[in-house]
Length: 569
Ligand code: ATP
Ligand code: MG
Image (cartoon, rainbow, N blue to C red):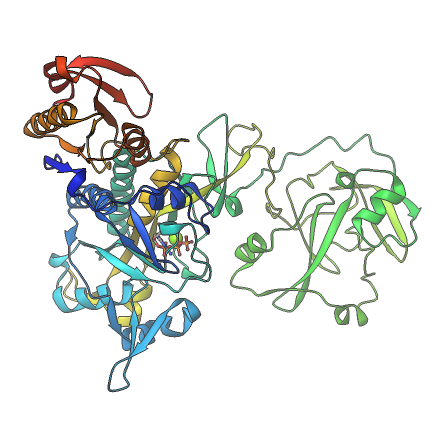
């Protein structure tokens, strides 16, 4: 569906552009959206959308709506002001902690401002759908959400009040849920492509929500708060916690026998590497943790850090704690600072290791005696690994699991998230429908979000240049920005061409402001970032205008007829 044609005269538009960046702004989208008159800060993380900003926000919403409708989504609008009780039932009244805006009504009853709506959608379907014949259902809304973010920042990128498209799928079978999920994945792909966003899909660590499949849509941008790993050589992209390296066995036959080394006062890798004059990567570091109370050692190369998040994910639901000095008192077999797996792995502790500690590799590690290390400790010969998994913090240059090229670590903005919730909320609220066999069937759900207001900022981040915003046409507040660069003659021609472009189906902004110099108008046009700029200037009397592409800077002189023919929708 096309945009509705419109001619907006700037002399009648409420807009005040600013030459200077707002004092507290750090990111390009924050600076430019404020300076170009799209948004105004009302309070920390709370923003007013001015006329041009509202148009962009609406354009994003329209694309989202069209693609959600295309997969059979039905639009609804739930309240933002919600009673406490359903969130008490799901446990989230407590779990959300400080992120939740809580308030009371005049009678003292508790309410909250919705941060996301799984509870209320579950109740809505429980109320409306009774039979398997009523499912599957996909419901969505584009609505204002509230989260009392610890660090609202970057303008509308992370607000305390923001616009989200949230949708929820309801199915009776796991296959049905997989299909609803796939439909959303496809719709999101179309949405972000239409919006002109550069994005990657990465599998997300589902963490505490405990679902099966979950993916995030990330828009690479320096201003992003998420880091992700991507491969410059293939299309591999992943959450930093989700990268896995494979075990590649080495030939261990050439290594000499284990040899003890006197290494006094070297309880850390740094002191050991300095003492022996070897790189930290030649040493094997053994981190001791307690897994449900039992001591487990985790072996990684000395130059790498253990990713405690990955470790926790891998061992969940067991609890993981670091060992303390007390844990060594009744364990004479474990010499603090000098632990090695030889002789102990599989006996004194279960031994988990990073794939880099592959069979056949040789290491310098603790000799299980105070002040002593051992060299030529070979994996598979001198110790066995009970279980391998990639447990180190990923670093730039690590091999791509797909093609082996050196990985990059980049920053990105999370613009969307799709998630197979499963039966968590259906269980909490007893959401059943009458099944095909005449018995109650528990419903399974998915939840899917898009940051609609955040997408505006993400687009600004990815598309701006040094002169200002630079919108893709689908989201731009207008198709053409006509500048009257001169006096009466120029203004007359600008208005005429504006009317004709409007009649041809375009959305046009005409800068007909009196008493504003051409220089200021040009600067504003670049800042506002409409894709095509038409200037009625020097050759206005001959009916000739200049047509400029905002992105490429290419310009061309055309007659009014030619310009209308060229730009007409
Ligand atoms: P984040 O990790 O950035 O805090 P989230 O994972 O908590 O986000 P979800 O609960 O997955 O967010 O919400 C769905 C989408 O809503 C996110 O993918 C993001 O695009 C958007 N979003 C979340 N929080 C905010 C916010 N404070 N301001 C603007 N958009 C947001
Ligand atoms: Mg998320």
